[in-house]
Length: 330
Image 1: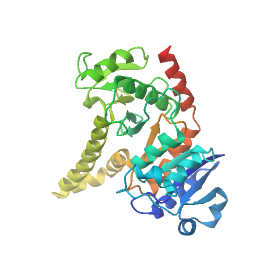
Image 2: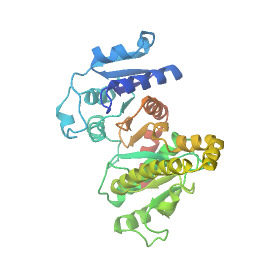
Image 3: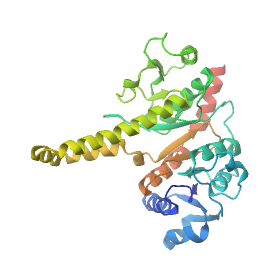
Image 4: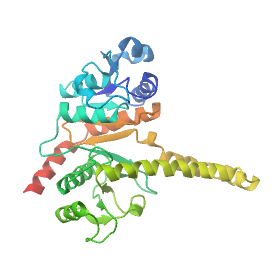
């Protein structure tokens, strides 16, 4: 049975939404258990006794706050995130889920769990909504601000493995984010990466920003600086569009009537752009599984982050990444 270690204390709103999300996940799916890490006296009261047989409570008296430095995480060994990561390191859990300090989670997972053989740098991947299609995967979105061409090549290999094994896309299309489709476009790093990626069967070449959401590509490769700006911009645009629609609807009775008729459409749109639908971002390239969630995650987001961890743990993604890396070297 798969066991998921959960940092119960790390989010912006304390253990309440994390425990609620855990309860929802346990009730919706069987055949997995959880290790809730935090102040046991506090979190035990939030879990119904009927679910206690599938929950292990692990004491952690310290909590790493969002204002703390990521480097502090390595020194403070009694924090909930440190102890949750240690469960994966010691093979007592298959994956770790945290909606707390993302930098700390990334650092601990990389240094304590370790990298896969051949991986230079792990990358944070996130899902982007697309019309009429499964979401696309973007990586890196923040783990590596400065990258070399070989890092981008490895991101492509990791992203391809993820959409194959976890999203079920048999023949994914991998694109390199640049400022033009032509081979000559981009900076020196992306142009060098382009040359190396041509040996990857799934590589379709450079893509531009407008291709991210149009369904023409399944894996978008970029460095963490560009990826993080892309992620935050997309979240801001989605929020702004929702506000603009609401503002304009209120301006006339006809618009209000139209909005009532379009309720299903608006509901579907909201669902597509809601981060809670995806739950969190996997840290690819570590010798295990770590799902990093948003600090403001609600119970739905926590539940879906746990489901992501389960799907990842049930796949062969890490073996496939190592295998593909060895082929590229050969």
